[in-house]
Amino acid sequence: MDTRLIAASPAEVETECLVVFALDHSVKEPANRSLSSKGLGSNSNIKDKPEPHLTVKDAAIEKAIADLVASGEVTGKAFETVLLHRPQGLKAKRLMVVGAGKAKSFTHAEVRKAAGSAIRALKPKMIKSCAFIVPDLATGAEDAVRTMVEGALVADFDPDTYRSDRKDLSVKEITVVAPSGSDQGKLQDALTQGRVIGESQNFTRELVNEPSNRLTPTMLADRAKEMCDTVGLKCELMGPDKIKELKMGAFWSVAQGSDEEPRLIVMRYEPEGAPEKPVLGLIGKGITFDTGGISIKPADGMEKMKYDMAGGAAMIGAMRAIALLKPQVKVIGIVCASENMPSGKAQKPGDVQIAMSGKSIEIINTDAEGRLVLADGLFYARTLGCTHLIDAATLTGACVVALGYANAGVFANDEDAYQHFTTALKRSGEKFWRLPLDQEYLDQIRSNIADLMNTGGRWGGASTAAVFLKEFVDDTPWLHLDIAGTAWMEDNKSWIAKGPSGIGVRSLIEFVRSFEIGK
Ligand code: BES
Ligand code: MN
Ligand code: ZN
Image 1 (cartoon, rainbow, N blue to C red):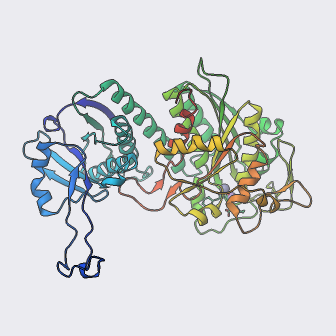
Image 2 (cartoon, protein in one colour):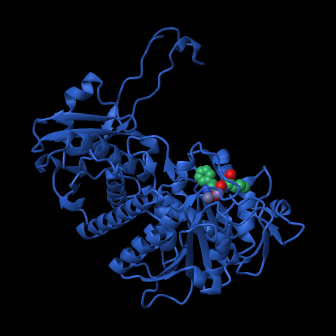
Image 3 (cartoon, rainbow, N blue to C red):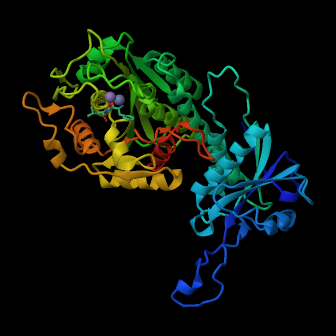
């Protein structure tokens, strides 16, 4: 998708479709006033009257949609799309009014979704280009432009890669229409940022979408390397010999059961002139397929376990964006890529493994493999000099039980690092909810035979997994993102296709940028 910025009056823009957002200013009237505290007996059947207000003041557009508004067809309700052909007084061929919800809750999160809803409404109509009018947003036009482009790109993605009847419905070009007199340099920069971020999120989604026969650990590593070569990152790929030489006993214990070789992927972003510290370590779980191993999963739904590399893919996407956005901060991305398979070579419950850190682990359930590969990934990041760690993993079903599909889980052992993450969330619009990491959970994973067990029983499963990881980071400031419930969307939304969501990518990018001096 090409993106361009112009400064123009909306009426003058020649385009297949001009897109404008409308907010819902309607006030809810009580259904029966006689029950209200004021005790007014009359007017008992007042209905909510639609009251859409455009997010930009523009007389020509208001005039063009006057009849639509009068008919009640445009309400401004969240993500409603209404299309008008040959709008009078405008040069555009069509005008689309997209609802952006209640005025008081209008933030960049709604801008993303509204822009996305427009794209997804236009795609099946084979409309190949459109122009978005920059809305007035409390946090400013740059924020609006960046998030509009992010939302449009994310919405353009469909996961139908292998359908033989696949049609290219993608929108080829979007134009962002800024008010004349706005700072074009700054807005162009915001547009580029949005583009890099949206494309990187889609790159992650492409990887997550691939089935395990088309994305083995080796192929995932090759895709990461190819990306690194393109954007100018250093990339090192390590196989079984190196993993064993590094004494990554926890990582290897998962990999040993598969005929597919594991890969340790290390991507480095070390910009000239960046301060020595911090060095941020981004560590991702890259299980390209999780059968559960000897503690095998039930057949029902097992096909979904191709997305068990979503944390790793998020790191690869984030590193791409970081390489292109060039923040002045050092970042190392690490992905532990492996399959988790049952076989004659696979580890068994009761086995004891020695992690790279020297800690011993009793394997209770071979399906708790993510924490094993991450234990070594996190420890390895520290040996490379990382001063701050953040990992992302589709780690536990328990996190899905706790938070459902609406929020991903975040755990933190350091308040300052957590503050950086909440700052990042304010810009990314992704939803994470903090879960506890108390010492008590550690009691659940103490083993009789070894230092730790890899599972902690039925209760508090997201937290017992997190405290397991914590044992390998020691005092290094660290965040753990459990994205098991959010990395795959179960339903289509008006702004994003069902399938891989790319959760984490935007927050990771913003997290890194929050460490730039003066930001
Ligand atoms: N990859 C799964 C977690 C998962 C579950 C991801 C659902 C996405 C959706 C992980 O490796 C796993 O199997 N976890 C087990 C741990 C248990 C054996 C302690 C789980 O959550 O059931
Ligand atoms: Mn598992
Ligand atoms: Zn897994």
